[in-house]
Image 1 (cartoon, rainbow, N blue to C red):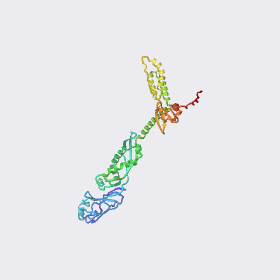
Image 2: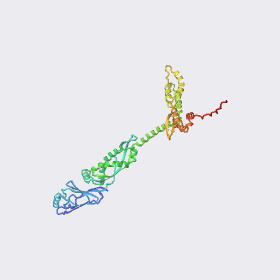
Image 3: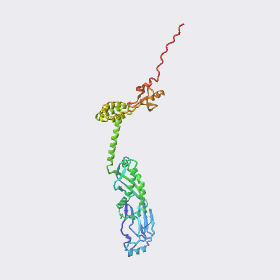
Image 4: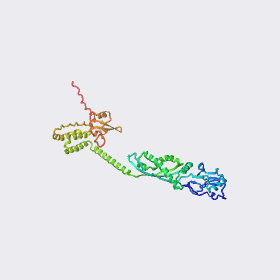
Length: 415
């Protein structure tokens, strides 16, 4: 639908002045012949008792002497003004056909505007809430409005000084007036978005619906309301996607390395300390001056795995000749950490219990919670196994006394 219609043609009723004729009753109606949102009647002077016709789907505003006097819904109205026929004729005679009264009728259609495209003038800088990366976004869309308060809209149009005469002029006026409002609300919506900007890019409808009430409230100052507001596309105009992908690759590599080390420890079990000791001793062979420091490091690697004392012994044998070569440097003894007690997990009443130290397990045997068929597991075992198939079998050897030996028959004494 078009937006605007206005002409500057002179009123044909005022074409002749001296000896001319002017109707005592005029019929005033929208004669644009076009489907326009706004149309201003080209006639500027009307006689008393002129009839105003407002067609269905229209509104009309009577402007008398530069002031808005009334808003008319659809129907027929008899206009009352100061323009008496004879006075109007004399005035036309002295002013060359131009009435000194400014009496205009403005028509507004109760229909949606044509779809108006919009787009951000420059990229919007937004920091992603998930990836903590700044992105530059270009956003575009479209909207439609309808007239909510024609008097407010008319005042805007009359005071805009934009020379609006065509539909495209008015569309451009809306773009210029509304784009700053849209950009402000859009920036706020993107900053408060709960997901990443990548998610926002794939959710233009949700964001547009969140923005619509705020935009609708802001443009009410123009006498219009939103009928439709959509975001058609959200585009990254910088290397944001490439930076996110690079960060994901780095995190993935770290995770894979961490998982690889974890798998290595799980596979080697208690042998992990021995493997580390072997590697450190190999380094010592290439760097004999760091014997004391490496011994301490080796003992630390053995903590929790029962390998500390073994490593200390291995390292000590190698360090003795090295320390003999370092004159004037006192030997630094390293106290190995205590060997960690073996602990088991047991499966009781359909749930896992533990870890339990070896010295506590007899209590579970006595209470009947741990039996030869109870499933158990400790670090280094590939899977759960029955207690009787592990070193715990010794706990049950004394739990059940052996059968009582037969008692020899009593021989009665001889008399």
